[in-house]
Image (cartoon, rainbow, N blue to C red; front, side, top):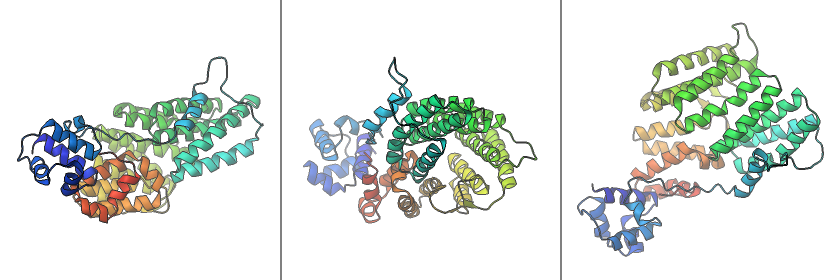
Length: 393
């Protein structure tokens, strides 16, 4: 099929238009559109492409560039992010901490717990707004009451901020927040907290395709807090296990099978020391291992294994919700498009705001739009989901 025709069909599907609807909107005959998409017509006049592009709400050049990324996703957080930038990068001559009433340690901890609950539910816009109010109070508390406990609270607040910023695709700001959290964790003299805050740094590296660096960093942090065989420190074991899983995820993306298997083996040993079943909970356990092995399998091109392992995991509420995207990705790979759309529907019902921000979720929706007939996409809610996610062709 001709490249222009391939791209035209791709964009049309992603805009949820039939050939007839595109013809009606563009003024180009359905026969010409059909011939272009089928490769039976080698090219088109520029004015024809322009008419098609206008009807599809893209630029003409986008129809000439195969699979161009057109997803200019607006998070709607410009004003709130300005406050975050002022906190992370204050003006010279100021400390970036606005005046305000003093807070107690107990009050700040309650507010952090509330913000964390919002983050876990995937309500990132509200969480970000809450953090811009919380962080100045935290910084004032650290300044006026320097202590390891004050630093611990600050580290947790900045850790949550870095997580939100990663989710809404502001990775560079997230990196600055990670650095702030690590500074406070170091001042708190708490190596487990330091490793927990550092966990977001390899996550950013993975997003930037720095897979080897991410694996090395995760393993380094894990080794810093490696628990002795007799350890019953739940927090230490939990963070250590998560870091090993993260190292495995990074290594699998780098096609480093030996490191991926070694890291997940370390995590598995910790999971079974902690006990539990295949119900996914926030606390680290066997379900986390199954999720990790399922994700590694699809990354390494084995969707059958990903589904076989992944289907044993039971989700209760929002923890582990990303696992649904791994399942949907695997179903698409196996051409079970109906199953993938059902799985995405479950993710949408569980955490609609969260799903809008997921890079993998957006990619899976695009992949489905490329293969599912337009009418089917409308009938089963896929087209509505794409609109809700703000996807561009």
